[in-house]
Amino acid sequence: AQKVTQAQTEISVVEKEDVTLDCVYETRDTTYYLFWYKQPPSGELVFLIRRNSFDEQNEISGRYSWNFQKSTSSFNFTITASQVVDSAVYFCALSEVGGSQGNLIFGKGTKLSVKP
Amino acid sequence: EPEVTQTPSHQVTQMGQEVILRCVPISNHLYFYWYRQILGQKVEFLVSFYNNEISEKSEIFDDQFSVERPDGSNFTLKIRSTKLEDSAMYFCASKTAAQNYGYTFGSGTRLTVV
Image 1: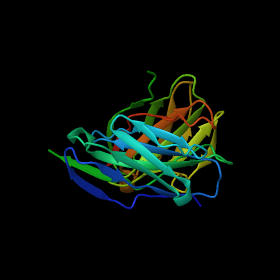
Image 2 (image 1 turned 60 degrees about the horizontal axis):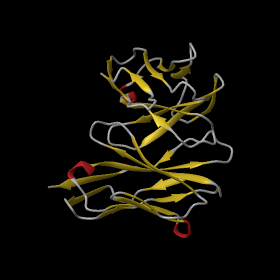
Image 3 (image 1 turned 120 degrees about the vertical axis):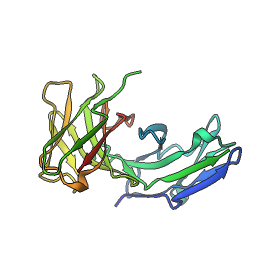
Image 4 (image 1 turned 90 degrees about the vertical axis):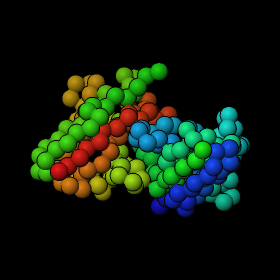
């Protein structure tokens, strides 16, 4: 069965620190997609990244970077030089391809607090 | 950029009342979804809808829930007789195809059952 685990419930850092949010997933499919979403206090879900299972290249977008390691079933997210505006709940999600309509399975989220 | 629009943003209803949550997906999208997030918890899949019928539903989506696409633009979630535990944020989402993983989420409807 598919599952997404975000072991860190809450993380608190001081502005300008780097922070890594962990995500470990389980799936029996060989083809799947992984996602990160940000949920600010206003409540909406903001899409950050989508990765397919065949693409293990790390990705960098500004202060954000993602490390996808199939061998350890992990898709970790690093924020470099964190800012107060990064304070939010971050969700990792998995979508299997085979036999489904592409539904998303979310982790429980990591609440990140960045203090000035 | 096209958006998924959800109305209302916040709804308060009495226990036992029927409630309808409305969504306008992006016009050329074909797959529609409802997700639920109880306060402080993870986002959970409720139901997917394609070609005017439910394609998948979770255990949460029991007989109290129904979905409809009444007029080719709106996509609604109805809860027939609300319970306190239905209080949650409900997100609508849409995408162009099952194998296209470019989800677009609406900004959510916060439902409070009192």
